[in-house]
Image (cartoon, rainbow, N blue to C red; front, side, top):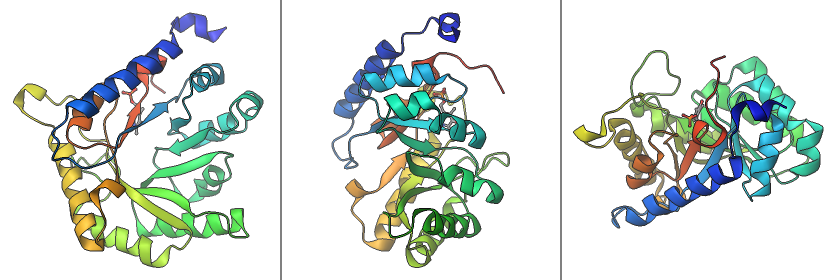
Length: 252
Ligand SMILES: *Cc1c(COP(=O)(O)O)cnc(C)c1O
């Protein structure tokens, strides 16, 4: 079986990451009022057997960023049978023509990567058709390109409040839960906090002010295997951790 190739102990991985999340949360500056972080286990490229193993430890939130892979895993008999309460987070770039595929995945819980009015509208309309009559609105995050890198998706920080406003006012089938960033890789923490994390926290503050929302209610999804502790220290509420749980990935 594939898992012997990696020799990875997923259960231990989950436990260890949860321990570190808790530690970082307890050690952060008390002026930060965001809520306790949620672990999203990023399972991309990894087999469903490993997901089921993580699920057995109590892990419920899983992240995927390739549309076809999300669909295949979400409809896989092992997942449907053993992971009935799984909550999928879509964390990849979403194209218009793939919206239906993502939204039809059983267990889809949140789309973290809304970055335009156009895609928000498409998801809003599609969710209504797929879930009628009147299922709960779909949870979404607005993705922000905090590092201003051309190859990264996401809106510019200056466009966050307008896009949020658009979603709140015109997308009745979406529930805006907060913001997400990927950020630049390889920040040197000896030089200070990660500017991408600081930037996303600033966006969160802007959103809270614009809509009179409480900081403790608005999600901030940032931090991956290499830097989730640092992200939590400055306020992250959703960390997306892959390789530290499931082992190294082959590049697609
Ligand atoms: C792959 C991925 C992660 C997880 O990265 P690791 O470094 O393996 O923890 C988190 N977020 C996004 C958007 C990803 O694509």
